[in-house]
Length: 638
Image 1 (cartoon, rainbow, N blue to C red):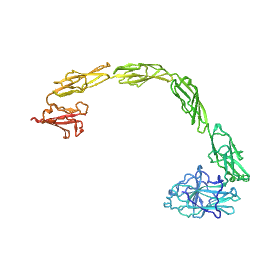
Image 2 (cartoon, rainbow, N blue to C red; image 1 turned 30 degrees about the horizontal axis):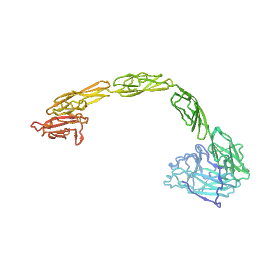
Image 3 (tube, one colour; image 1 turned 60 degrees about the vertical axis):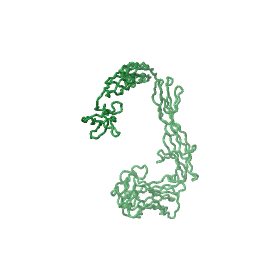
Image 4 (cartoon, rainbow, N blue to C red; image 1 turned 180 degrees about the vertical axis):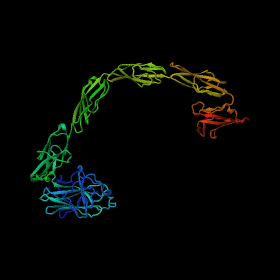
């Protein structure tokens, strides 16, 4: 939070810089070092020096850090205000009751009769939690006074109370004053707050900066204030500076900075209005011209800088083409390079490309040779590199046979040729996938690919496709019980490639060439299902027994899985007992099925529309024929 200033002008009004403030002529930064610095004469004797990190009221210290002072009620300040000042010191004061002078210094060598700005950086070192909390500590108030050597007041300024902050914050305080003709002034800083808990602060970087004319530097042949050039193609760059008629007898001194303006060095001999920059090594350089009146050339605070001009010298890029490129005749080969933003290639056979990784498709021996790449950066700097392309002869693969059709379980030897090394894929069903003549015995249709490699790892490939005829398989279905005199449906199944099937004997069947014919034999009979491969892959036979029943028969299990086989619990001849009742109970004694002889519907294994769990169930069968109730168990299998 910035604190507003109170300006006490004492008869001087509106002292503003009509040009520009340049570099500080003097800076008081309290030095650098490890641990506490020695005492200084600028702090009056009313304040005692301590080399401890936490000065009590009426004491001061100079250090590069502040510690966990007074039960951690002070901020821990790990570094001073000065940018980039490693181990830089700052002044810490635990002030007495005001007004009390805390700092006094005589500044000489100021450029006479011009406006100066004095600036200081101040930090309230007390935390809001100190002095009972809630920011109740005494806030510092400082008064800056500038006088000449005779005691005449040049300027004075008091700050508003510096509030406590939760994070340590350096605040800037500044005022302007006219430098006397002697060039010497006295700076006095007074603490004007009360004594007690608080009024503890740090001070750093007290500077004196002159106000000078507006000085403009330009590139003569360029319209910008920043130029980027390549190290290998640097032109001479002419710069010019002007103070717009501010001086009748100006002097000039051009300066250069290679550390972003943190420090400047005079360029030897560059003392004219124009400066011709000649090529240098790569790097970022700032140039400016210091101008002043020749009569004050020996007073550094009378020198005023122009705006900086930036010259960025970009180093030559390091173009890197792939060191060695090779490929096989007929393949696609890719060149590759790095080091730039854009690329341009030239090579044999009229090759030209403008991408980083250009392809050479269907490469031939005419494409072999030296390739040149130009790598160019975003600012136009470039470099060249070369690479060599070698093209190797590719093998020509042979393979016999290329198509195969045979019966499941058969095998055949494959024969590949054309070079030194072989690799088959997939390897399923092969006796060896790295030889030229493996035995192939696949179980299903498949296509094999063989790659034939030469000593340069160049390859060619061939394929062979297999059609595997599945052997015939007959399944006549499970044996069945049926009521004598009623029709029963056979449930057969036939598998295999290009097959024919039939039932035998054909008697009592409605269609012996149908997998699921209806049979109505007069009694028990066995039927055989014969499945024949029309491709010569064999014959399969399976049989089923149909057992005729003319008396009550109660199955002991069923499989209600909707596969058409034994899906219902059906009591044979149950309908011959019209008054009969069949009940089925689960293991908890719950009735899950009831059937009646006069309207018999076999049990499908459900209860209230939902499938019953597999397991053992109890049935009770009352035929109402004067005989005892029939009881037993049945298995529901899923």
